[in-house]
Amino acid sequence: MTANGTVAYMTGAGMQHVDHEPDADGPVAADERIHLIVLFGGESAEHDVSCTTAAHVLAAADPEKYRITPVGISTDGRWVIAEAAAAALDAGAAPLPGKLDPVGSEVSPTALLSAAAHEPATTVVMPLLHGPMGEDGTVQGLLETVGVPYVGSGVLASAIAMDKQKAKEVYAAAGGLMADAGKRQGVADEGGWWPEFASNEEALEMTVRAIERAGCHPGSDASIFLG
Image (cartoon, one colour):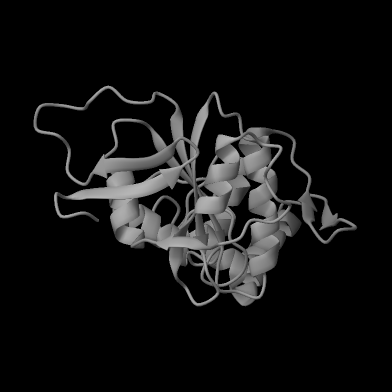
């Protein structure tokens, strides 16, 4: 953050400066594309997988629709603007490497995200992090605290997915309800659980009941997202 209360960060369009507080005279005309902040890397053992995932996402993103800020997280938890990836984006998708490198100018996560939350343009964060300290609800909680919209599961859903014991409890609750109702269910070849429902409404009703049976409260502890 600079002395005048702005945050500087690199995007595919070069170095950008965003006011940390909204301008008193109203927002200034700006790039109308969606500002997409891509988080990659992370502290887990799946760091390299995340860096590869991010490279594919950046290569597929439409530059006419998205203004991208690639933010890397090192294995020791430092957040940096991935300047090499940003420079490659400025030249088009072709120069992007097969795996992004989380190296660049270090930034404060809260300053970066708070500035993004006050941008005139629509901002969305896409966490492409794998494993603990990334897809376990920790980063999602930070994003919700700052107030920036993000892609993917919320805090509780992320935490449950990482906590295998709790995930088993939710699945067991759902399986018990299916058995009580005489519904068919099973496990697919890749390990996913498949239930059989007569309608979308029945599936939603059973999901809510399973959340309740697992000891959670729908709407506060857990929510259902329909994409």
